[in-house]
Image 1: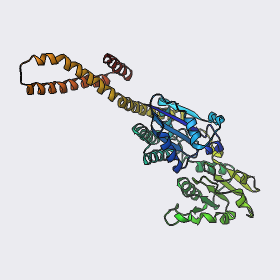
Image 2: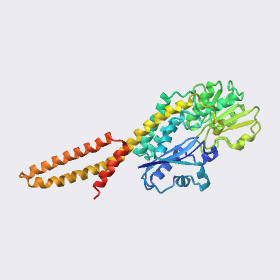
Image 3: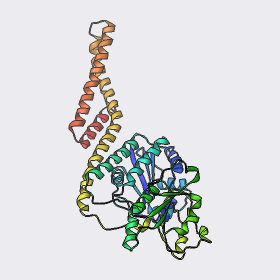
Amino acid sequence: MSISMIGIDHSMAPVDIRARFAFTKKNAGEAMEQLKSMAGVSGCVILSTCNRLEIWISHEEELEASLYVCLCRLKGIQEDSLEKYFVTRQDREAVEHLFYLTAGLKSQILGEDQILTQVKEALSLARDHYTADSVLEVLFRMAVTVGKKIKTEVPFAHGSPSVIHRAIQTLEAKGYSLEGRICMVIGNGEMGKIAAQTLREHGADVTVTIRQYRSGVVNIPLGCRRIDYGERMEYLPSCDLVVSATASPNYTLRRELFEGVILTKPLVLIDLAVPRDVEVSIGELPGVSLYDMDSFSGGEPWQEQGESMEAAGRIVAAQMDEFFLWLDGRDLVPRILEIREEAVRDFNLRIAKILRNTPMESSDRDRLLKTVDDAAGKVVNKLIFGLRDSLNQEAFLDCVAGLEKLYEE
């Protein structure tokens, strides 16, 4: 069994390229089902966030299909030139990447917390669509364990790492204070709620848009007001800052909606969505400053980052050893059972002649053969699993291969 992934993220491609490969929850589920139906594929998980898209599969050793070709087919894209934005990883390299990723150590905002939740949600969605096999199930659960362990035990020096925090830091560095500002947040999902709460914490007057059909069941952050999503353009001229953070495949703010809108003061727009929520040309309007996800990358390196990364690396290495010990054991069990059956059969053939010539009742002979058979199986199990516990992994695999070869003839 092998593990492969293909991915695109903020470090390799701008937001407009990433947006072309992004999945909503609905079409991610459909895509996983299609991928799992491919010959040789045992399991599939899709991780799609604002900063990255990754497809994970567990499969037989030889897989002829190209994950990039499969992804392009799913998205209706026919451009080979876009493959340069992707990276593929397999087995140990892939597992190591996922463990570091889940800890927030490959994020646009180093150490951010949302990716841990996003990895858990990706696995949950795969479960809902019955595409997560035991290999990916264990892998992603272990990744979450690694993420939590690193966040708990490694002393990274950071405050509240998220894109909205970095956005506010960027604005404050330019002399823009949020105290008393009138702000609107379009979207009340996880990222929208974090944005609204953070703006409130910085002294802003915050209003959150709510879809009308959800308005009776959705909670908004404490201290914020709500308006219907359809009223956003009427409220917008009174705003100093607008954040849009939805999972919609369509624009929440289009250029045509600004026709007839009179802005009497500067307006800051922050688009935290992939695909984009805000049409890019809006940033060309007088008095409008438009920022997207890629506007807030970078930043000063953390103090003692090298030491902390080494500590995180030790946690990742230990968990990787545990995962591959489980994976190798999982693959070895059927092989060990076959060796045991062949060894017991060999033993029984050698002892059968002696038992045939031993005077005893037929029923007693049958019971004795059954007892010998069980005992021989236990002895072989003890020998093989004893070797596993006393030898390093490579030496043990050599032993198993040698035993298999012994009984091939």
